[in-house]
Amino acid sequence: MALVVHKYGGSSVADAERIRNVARRIVRVKDSGLDIVAVVSAMGDTTDDLIELAHTVSSDPDPREMDLLLSTGELVSCTLLTMALRSLGYPAISLSGPQAGIHTDTMYGRARIHSVDPDRIKSELQKGRVVVVAGFQGITEDLDITTLGRGGSDTTAVALAAALGAERCDIYTDVEGIYTADPRIVPNARKMSEVGYEEMLELASYGAKMHPRSIELGAVYQVPIYVASSFTDAPGTLIQQSADERKMENRIKVTGIATQANVAKITVRAVPDRPGIAAALFEPLAKGGISVDTIVQNTSEERTTDISFTVSRADLPHALREVESLKETLGAASVFSDPTLASVSVVGSGMQNTPGYASRMFRILADGNVNIDMITTSEIRISCIVREEQAAEAVRLLHRGFQLDMEGQ
Ligand code: ASP
Ligand code: MG
Image (cartoon, helix red, strand yellow):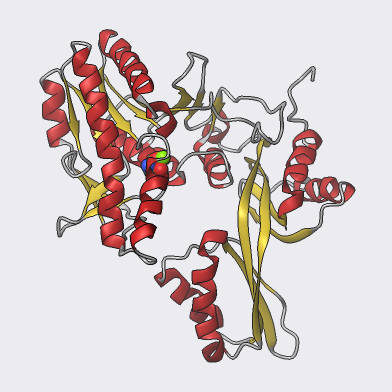
């Protein structure tokens, strides 16, 4: 029987009524003759509440204990949803991440899935049951519970869809799909009916809410991902290899404007310009689990150079501590940071090889008096780091400037 995987986010299962609503939606799919695996997030703000609770008993909670604690949020929602399904008269069973066969590495708080052993889920499906899986968690070789990072249930769902050969992975959330920009910033942003994985990856890591790793997985295993609201039946957005991506040479098209708040910049001043310096700086950061985004190194004057890079604001204290401790080894003159930045990106296919897109972006920002702090480009995006208080305005200007505004508005 054909199989679909559904994922319901925290707001979709925030209370008993919403859980019953999700159960009714699942039943409709089951009645249409499909097998279904449902992955759930923790109810509402449960994960935030558990983190807060941990900090009331310890200023620096142990990562292993933290993951075991956080995994309980998803256990609550998956068992309750299963009970709701059973009370509607449908056979259903809940499985924790480990029971569902999700094996991960040992990076607590941001574990990556090594493999999925789908046997248990398959045998439950064969018994005609709806399988409800606790998202966001897995188990290490040593049988310790891990979590996949905030928002990680999306990744659980796509990983299961890939491992089970599902037709599709539906992500149900509190928005109706993926928009050309954040609708809270740009009121006339358009909902897209379809978007390619690569573009979505940029949109996801630059603000549109979805765990970026889930999109990567979808792209690698070619799982179509459908993002829609669990509160309405409005059509959502299908993420799949787009018509443009399938073409040998992409048609150039701007898909959307992405933005990310809470960007912090660290600048290491006057380090010697010689081989090994960047490695000596970024290796320890990588080991510390800090992901670095934009990196800019200036041309050297008098054999020293400045290196600036961005991290998320949450990682700033940790990153600064690392960099300060490296200052002497690196021979750097000073280290300073700026926590009040944001990034705005123009996302689309085939932009890097097309002259004119970057300059158009810079012109739009210049005319709006938005100062650009750093610039990076990739195959499918051009990103500028700007002051946080100007980010929303920058997004609106770019959305209009690249003619993404909804027609007739
Ligand atoms: N409950 C976890 C979080 O809030 C995972 C998820 O929602 O996907 O981050
Ligand atoms: Mg959540």
